[in-house]
Length: 229
Ligand SMILES: *Cc1c(COP(=O)(O)O)cnc(C)c1O
Image 1 (cartoon, rainbow, N blue to C red):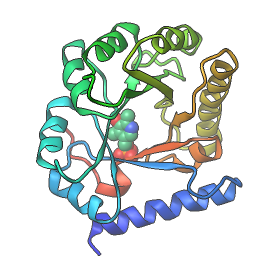
Image 2: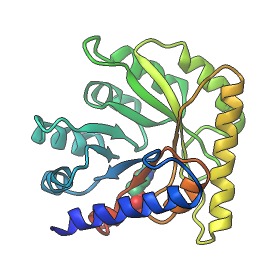
Image 3: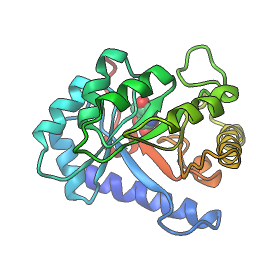
Image 4: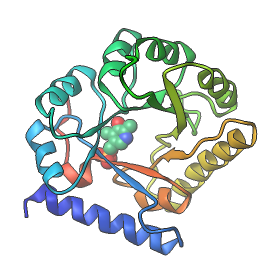
């Protein structure tokens, strides 16, 4: 097996072990392979090993790869910061967007989503650690934003995504992920039913799964270290 295929199997085994450890149903955590900076050929390798869902951060790079890989029936997730002048391309090429943190972006995505496509599946990015350096809606503003977005056509609000403050301590990691889970429960209790918690990356998959992640976004552990741009 090639390296990407072997890495993918190892990540799947790690997810299965984490599900098992905290008593969650096997297969309840979906794997999003984050392929930013890696080539279409790397994605082909992962696809040959059974992976269908891929996450990308840069619009032009992603659109080029999506075109090169047409015919493979992959599922594309946009997970990077969104500039308003890129919303049309995102709405026309992606199945999911995880990084919506303001209404204006959601309105533009809704307006640009082609009628022939399924609704764009959407997650709010939440700045769970209230860090100045991170994008994301403040936890206290999430309910109001979710309510406004839920009223827009052509979008389907599915859940929330976070990138918590970096920490090597699994107790600290779990604390942040628990906050996102609680916020999800709060929104659901207030009439915004959400079924997706997009949380956990290569370094903190296990903590995220223990706190209820339904989708983990894994790049490095599958494709290797990224070159710094
Ligand atoms: C790059 C990226 C990932 C993947 O991170 P790894 O540490 O390589 O697993 C996940 N989520 C987002 C939003 C990213 O930008």
